Length: 249
Image (tube, one colour):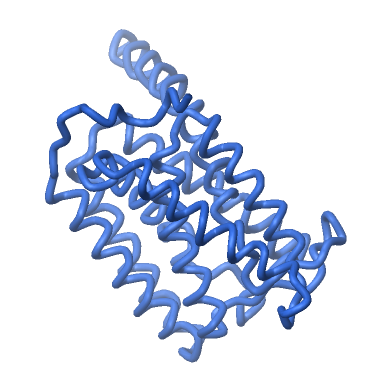
């Protein structure tokens, strides 16, 4: 029924590293996005230094596959930011830019989704967490298209539908569950602080969207897919390059 979910009877291991990564990220996201909601533009450089430092430290204990996936996620998500924000204007940051800490932030968020997904808690309670996410995310999406909402969120409902398909049919359901929690939290904090805001009408689909859209975690399903597909081929290419380079010396 759910081939990519962990076996309910399997023994799980609780690695403190996974919980530390998650805790640090939630705290850092809350503080940095709240602060940037009112800080001067120049302070984004300081936040960028902090973000890259945190990411490098977090990656220190990861294997080369995860590190490669994270860096692919950083590149892909940053390209997406420039297209969706600066070009399409689906959402806009306070200074109409891409803050310098955003690329590293994407890496931290992706790694956190991975860490949550592989954690003993998520592995043991995968089905219970899935039910919780479906219920909370579903209620959020339904509220967004109900007559009782101040801002219609059709895009959010569509994205949540895509998220559900990825969750139950995709190869990384645990990562998607982790992404739901961290991306939903950072979107709520960021929009409430005024660090960025979503356009009322999505320029690509011309559908109304919330601030933030409810199913925003669906975008990280795409980021994960690109990262997973690209990691091994990239590592092979780098390995061949180094071998050829060493042979020619």
